[in-house]
Image 1 (tube, helix red, strand yellow):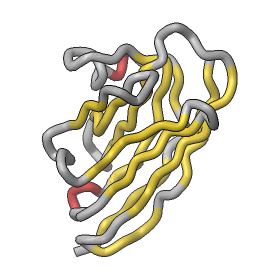
Image 2 (cartoon, helix red, strand yellow):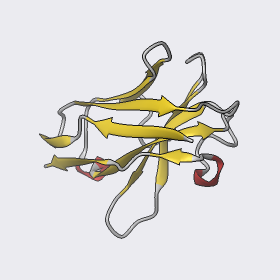
Image 3 (cartoon, helix red, strand yellow):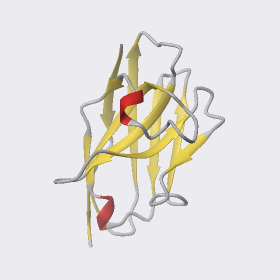
Length: 126
């Protein structure tokens, strides 16, 4: 299993930006899609963005398309999420996930990921 540690969360005003980072360590399985998920109070966990092993394919939820950018540095075992034009509705705990299955039908499925971080809080005020 892969160990994941997120950082970079915080409080910003609407329209601001944050960059989340996720440091990965440990055994990598053949399933090496990585993703960012979020969970707001009282709501279920939802997929925000996913990325293939080489970084060549990226997937986004419609709610963040054009505002968030996912990237990864495989040499450093790092995953990133650049969040711009933040909105109050983006406020949530953000989780890094690994050992998932990429593809349009699969990247957002929580059950497809074997490893999860502890989360980092993002709060956007209006």
